Structures are given as C-alpha cells and as structure tokens.
Image 1: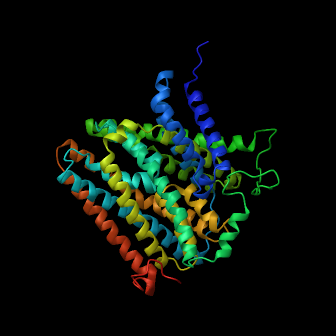
Image 2 (image 1 turned 90 degrees about the vertical axis):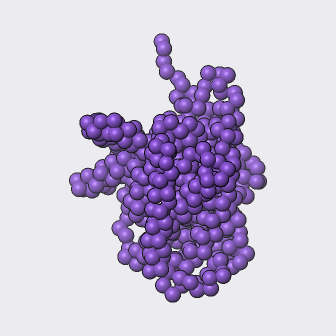
Image 3 (image 1 turned 135 degrees about the vertical axis):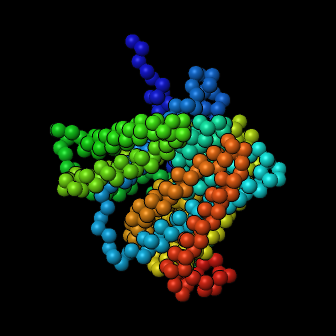
Length: 472
C-alpha cells in the first residue's frame, strides 16, 4: 500500500536532533554556561544535513518550512487559549511598562533596520530588497516562525530567498539572546544590579544541564484533570481544543479569501499575502474561542499547564526546523546586509533596552529587563530561561506581567505586520516611496512610545543619563 511517510520522516529526523541536542547540553559545559536552547542546537545539527546530505536522499527543506509555518500557528493558539488569572490592579502600570518596553524595541528595530537598508540601497547595494530592514524585527522580536511566514509572502511576490533570510535572522536572534543574555545577567551581578544570593539558588538546580539527575526530584506543577482517561486522555482533550481551533482559523481565512476574490486581482493578491500571516488569524480565532468558552461558563475545562506544554512542543520543533531549513547559499548571497543589520540592530536593542528598562519599571526591574531582553532577541521561552537564572521558581511578578502585556503588544504590533508588504509593493513598482513612508511611520511609532515612556518613568526618566543602569 502507498502510505505517505515524508512528514513523519522529517519529524523523526527533527526528534533525533532534539534528543542529541539534549544530550549535548547535558554533557558539554559550554552549552550549559550559555543556556543554549536544545532546539537551537538541534537546528544547527539539521542545517548541514538538509543542505548537503538530505537532497541525496530525496529530502528537501520544503517539509521543514511547512512545519515551521504550522507549528508557529499552533503555538499561538495554545498560548492564547490559556485562561489568565484575574489581574491585580496594582500591577497595571508594570504591565503597561512591560508592553511599552517590548513595543519600543519593535519600533527601534523596524526604524533602524529600514534606515540601514535605505543607506545600502543608496550606496553599495542598489538592488537590495527594500523590505529587508524589517527582518530585524521579524527575526529578533517576533521569532523565526513569523520571519519565515512574512518572508514566504515576499517570495510569492517575486523576491527570492526572503524566507531563508527570515529564518537566518531568527537564528541570529537566538545567538544574541543566549550569549547576550548570559553576559547581561553576569554583568548585572558584578555591578550590584541584583543580589548574589538570588543567583546562587540557580546553581543548586539542574537548569544548566537541562535534565534532572538520578537523585534529583523534578519540580512538577499541580495538574487538575477535567476529563477522565477512561473517556478521553486529558492531553488528547487539550490537543483537540488546539487543533479544532486551528481548523476554525483555516476556515475563517478561507472565507475571507473567498470574499476578497470578488475584488479582482487586488483582492486575490491580498488574500495570498494574508495566508503568510496566518498566525494572526490563528490568534484571533483562539481569542474568539476563548471568549465563547467564557460566555458559556466552561473556561474551567482549560488546562493551562498542558496548553503550555503543547505550545512548548510546537516552539521546540518550530525552532529546530526553522534553523535546519536555512539555505546556506542564500545566506552567502546576502551576508553583507545580514551581518550589518544583525550586529548594529543587536547592539542598539541591547543598550537602549537596558537603559530604558531601569527607568521605566517601578519594581523588580532587573528581572523584567532580563525576561524582556530574551523575548526581543530570541523568543519568550528564551526569555523565561534567562529569567529562571535569577528567579528559578518565578516568584517575582515579571513573568505574569509579561503574559498580561503580551495581549497589548499583539494588538499594537498588528499595524507593523499589516504594513510589512508596503516596501515590497513599492519595489514592484520601481519606487522607494513606500519604504520612506514606513520609515516615517516607525518614527511616529517611536515618538508615541517615547511619550508613554515619559509618563511611566516619572522623575526617573532622565536621571543620571550617563549611567547605563539606574539603581532604584
């Protein structure tokens, strides 16, 4: 019988790479010291395999790219379906401060990335794709999945190699997150930004190795089952919620695409581009499903712990597949703009984030700074890994406030995503006008966030400006 095996072969290869990455982190000090995520290690193991060996075996990166696309959407759904605890009023300002900190880096990365690209176009690389500047934000703050999704949309418009460039920036973001994050934690400790005793607790656990030893008792969160295994396994039930929501999001976008078809060629082009940002529709559908469950008073059936595990599974496989799918040939072609943007934007984000964070947060400033730094260079799981160095049990409100802030960030980041195609549209018409237009928009975005910063930081806003970190 002619069964289809390709997707399971790719999943099996990714799984073996993840297992090998886990073994490497458990045994090699370097990976423990810099908290290199196992999924990132797995991705770099897959990179040479899929570039040189897999083609000889009849395998290619197309399946990996599809997995990145779908795992990204599933991770959004799993996280958004989680039921949030009631917000405490006293945390509202810090939630807003967290959202402002994240959105400021989005705007900084968009602005300076676009500015760098315009300079390159006007000087040494006149044929450079004008939307290239957005990859700093897509790959760093938003992650490899979003960078790949938007890059794939640009490829559909005729700009070859952009999906691979997006995946490359996603991988470089993890490099900044891991190495820069560990440096930030240790530098902060040396400068007295945090008590050494807070750091000592981390070294007593098994976080660095990534696996528990024989004599260690892994911490396990309390799990409450609202379904019985005799009827349906609780994990199966939660996976079914995620997959069912994903089907609804697919049907929603199919309906929207059908409606856009009546607008003619413009509507058809828009529909194609919308499929590139499917994660937005996945998130919106998850919000609708979550609201419906709340209205029906059945939100109690949602298991936050298992949904977190499902999201973690999707992110781990997505990151490994994203790095493995990078085309070395494409990276070699664009190495100059990739290197310039990766280094310049990484440095700007690091220094501005530290300076602003110490003045905008009213409490637990260093904890919040470390978490947000990991998120605006790598992904949220990377930020949480860095936070656990100084807050092993998540006792501070930093992680909880981040979850509250993520909703605000998502809403305010939608305009950035929806206008991402403007430089590409202009390039197709042979004009840079749209690129200059979005640069001005990012400038206004920064101005708005600067006003919010002034309101939140109070009398700390410009205190000791020469000091990178303002001690509270």
